[in-house]
Length: 295
Image (cartoon, helix red, strand yellow):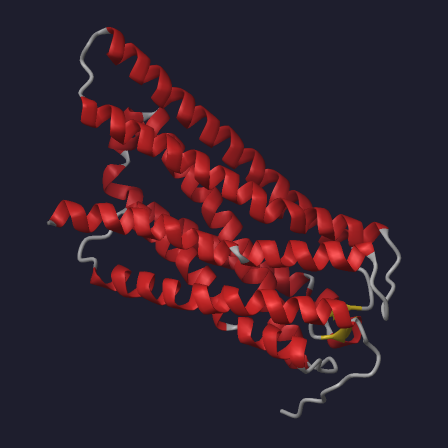
């Protein structure tokens, strides 16, 4: 495969400088964190449904991190579009939305466990199987969407690997915005707020009955903090990029000089990528509890 460098049709110096500066630390931090998490996961002897979901999330993050050097390289040496650029764009979309859908599944899983403990207990024996099926369906759904809208990612639609010269089709944009963001954020917000409300109400009820031990209070506060942090991280990381899609669609494409549309989109794309590092905090908290319990 032959690549052509220094594509003359694009000269967005500021944006390329931005990518050179910000994506390198994400790769430098994210790669060791995700490799460490991968090693810890393979040390687990007994997996639960939560481990399955978290491993699927880590796999999506790891694959995105693994291909990040190509984006960094493109920032230093912009390439004219090729089939490989189409592949890199597919990787970017696929892994980001696998992460979004997996985080959504984790929120739903957590909500059922907290809000409906009897149902959760009844499904206990099948929860891991259900988690595996859900993860497979997530990958199949994302791959199907990418395949169906592959024409949006062809090399003739690009100026360089990561700079478009043609807007996304409205149908593709609507799928990304509604299926890929609005539905997940609605589910995550509802499940998270309901789970937090249930925990706080049960805490108040048991506190009135004076049945609460100090360690139980600490544990429940920790759970509330984790749920809240996960929801905030999701909103902060993935809201800007989907606003960026709209801004880019509604604004005329202007290359060769700095403009708000390009600047906002590039910054929001970087913010979304940092989720690969922030998810590692969740892996740490999960695996820390597992190995602390063993010891």
